Length: 129
Image (cartoon, rainbow, N blue to C red; front, top):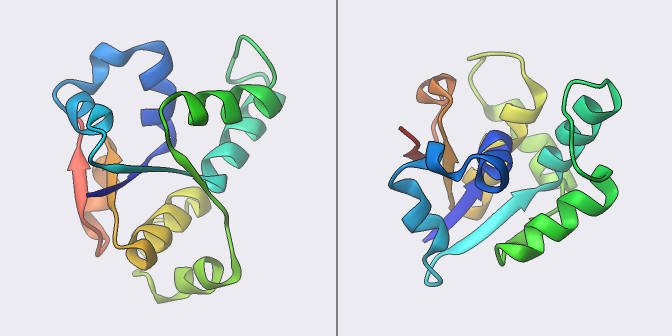
């Protein structure tokens, strides 16, 4: 199974893994392919720069080291993903969430998330909680 981690799931995995409940087993299953989107790295970097997300080290080292530590593949934001956002229903306007949905659809992945907003999108989810 292909799993794309929502930004908060990546953060919780490294700071509060108990919040992930039973989903942590799917994340730790070596038979699953894990992905972390560059959109999540971008979101983390913005929040860090604004002082809204404390990290033990800058995002330039934190994100790649944590992505590698879980055996995930870094998923770039490419042209196909960017234009696929236009095909999504107007559920909400968060560009990071919309990119994750577009990437999941193109990759054939499930989105691992605790965010209920994704119910309105045409994407398979693995729900935390």
